[in-house]
Length: 411
Image: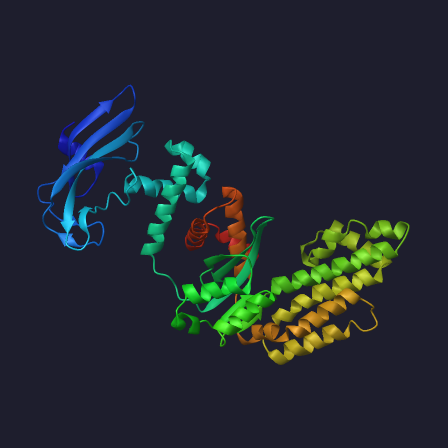
């Protein structure tokens, strides 16, 4: 095969193959590459300044994508340039995105493979170490993030993820309109969210935020009122319903210890049934709940109150929502359900954040969907030490809609 044919197969614009070496026993292919005669464009790798003269020539060996069953290596002839601003620098070329001994298309192939497979599997596929694959994937994601246009932030979501006993919590700030995370912070303190507003956003970007979906964690509310006072705080429906489920479970436990004999056996083991929505239960499970309700009126009333509370977010007008909430609270009279009364007081204390949902409709399910994708990444990667790497992975996952089915389920 002639050298110009090797040049066509290599496919590097502006460069030609002037020598090649094939090792059939070791299954390796080595190509020596230099610039074509008409390619005299030199760019400083430090500042990107265009230059015309080179002061030195050296060779650099990088690994390229495999050619069939042969492992390909390219020995590239590079120039050093003397930049007026940066001094002596290596020229910048598109085929070599970093100082690592890998070509750009090999790093892109590794990065694409890491989107749908674990690092260990990708390392076995390309014959690389796991740490090398993670470093390549990080550089691939950083180049992707630098080249993309970041959308404006008008509706934000703030939530936390429990990482474990050592790292505790991770604060997640997401864009509700695009469904992607924007920033991660350690712990869930007021100072954590203050850092995001102070260091990540300008005053103009903060003024553009119109709504924020948060749970009823007080430090988050204090930070939002300090940095974005015009933003409407909307309390997350899923966290409120989680409190309602906890109230039902507390009623179940109290009735379990109050009842005795055969009635106690009916209440026992019904926790997950009581936490489930009625519409999601099959006929057998509905029959089990009906048997429980026939023996215990308090558990039935608590469950019906929990189910009817979900209707609160179906209203469009504030007055209708307030009337329904008042009628829901009136049903607690003479029921002697202390956990549900506590839940009612909590709803009244956070009434403004609940009513704000009528004033501005936000997609609440996006926050839970983003958290679900992050947890899936943590399980697949068995944890991440670098939060920036985890953030880029989650942003890429949301931007490419790889887990779009998960978004629809959570919404």
